[in-house]
Length: 263
Image (cartoon, rainbow, N blue to C red):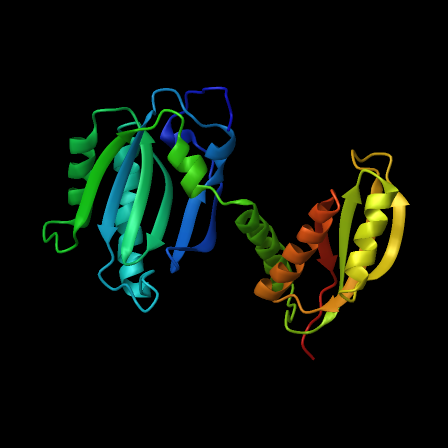
C-alpha cells in the first residue's frame, strides 16, 4: 500500500484494468479491477467504500452471467461509472459471483442516496433487476487491497496468462509440447544447488548455473523441461517451481519458450 495520499479525479485515472479468476466459498468468481490504484491509493477525499450490488438476470451455470445479460450489465456499468465519476466517485473494480454483479467504488462520504439514484436510473424505469447500494468508511482502502487485489498466486496466474496470450497472438498451438526455460535466483551457491537437486527429480535439466553481478541474488539457475503451455498446465508448473525456489530461500524469475505453430 502506498502511504502517499494523492488527489486524483476519476476521469484522469489511467486505464490499467485487468482480470483474474478465482473461487469464493468454492464458487467461481471473476475479478476485474483497475490496478493503477494499487500504487496510488488511498486517494484524498475518497475515504468511503460504496458497494453497488446488481442482480444478474441470466446467471448461467457458473453464476457469472450469460453473454446477453452481461452485455446489458456492461452498458449499465458504464453509465454508473460516468455518472458516479461526476460525483468524484471512483469505480475501482467489479466482481461477478453467484448471480451477482458487484461494483466497488470509492469516493467522498454522504453520497449513498445520490449513488442509489444513479444506479436506479442506469437500470431504467422497469427496474426488474434488483440492486442494493450501501456505504462503509474505509479510509485505508482495505477492501481494495485485501479483497479486490489478487494474492501472489493469482498475480502469477495473470503473469502466466499474459505470456500465453502473446504466444497465441503469434499463432502458437499451446497444446504442443516444447522446451520451456525457467530462471531462479539465490543468495548462495549452496541454495541454488539444493534447488537444482530438487527440480532434477521432477525432470528438469540444467542449462546454466552462473553468477549475475547485477542481481541482488547473485546465483542464478536456468533450467528447462519439455511441457505444453496451456495456461492452467503451465501455471501449475510455475507454481511448483516457485515452491521449490522458496523452499531453498530463492526467487523464481519467470519463463519463456519459442512459438510452436500447428502443422
